Length: 370
Image 1 (cartoon, rainbow, N blue to C red):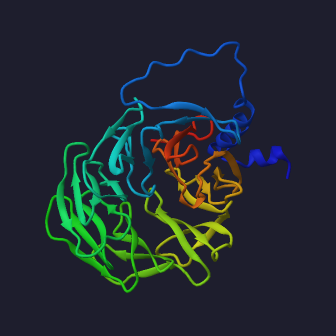
Image 2 (cartoon, rainbow, N blue to C red):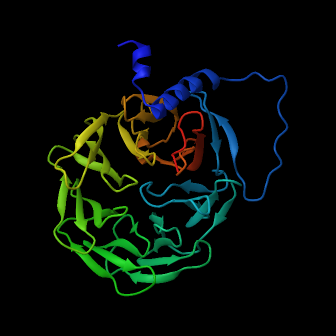
Image 3 (tube, rainbow, N blue to C red):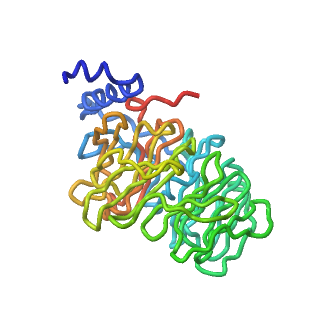
């Protein structure tokens, strides 16, 4: 098929991304300046610095300074972007202590949100309505308005499992091998499920009544009101390494690794429509995220030989190298995309300590329709 015919078959959104990719390759090259621009005057709480990616020559913005603190992204499937407050939730470690922080996506100021002893960075999330910040401190689940203090919601009897899920009024957490529903406004925890195998990363179905979670290498769902669990993605031939609901709750997207060193594919499954289907093979993604309509995916490669952040189109399953994430341990890389699809954030220790980096997507991805 000719290039012209291929373009004619593209949707308007896909063509926008395709054209943006060409613009990216043509425009983002080193620029020779006759004189260096004057450095910007530092602003309190603002740590952003412009960098040129050595692999693709893309212009990156480092938004947290690794010389001041180490910064980490929570799991991208949790609610870490606040539409109302226009901020990103992240974890920051200074003087050996980790706390919850926010990054304002307009002023680029960083602000501390918690003051606890033993923050579980995997637990950082907002409730679905963004009114409360939730996290685990040791064996205690805390919640409250972001930056305005928090209250105790639950004391775990066993070691909490990784990740928290949320709706508007409840927190989904794992106490040992029990999946719990805990009211945000206080009240007794309710047991949704008791499992024989460890439970990881519970996720409430947007607009639905299911809870998805990972367990024993597979992907499962269970009704929020309790009942029998159903395995959606088999674990016999590999394992699910990451999963997330689509924004409309119609399906689950997940990474499936075939064995310890086999290929990693991006797949999708609808809870009530049989087995999952493969979207595409990937460049060994260690982590991924997606735009709100799940038409564009972003993946961080876990390959040591090519630690790259890719853009992938659902329609033609083609990958575009955006930049190098450069993480020393690529398996720990993470990516997150803002709700308006205009900013891609990732963390990396490419400069020694982990920091947050941003890539503008305005020339690559169209804003979602409101």
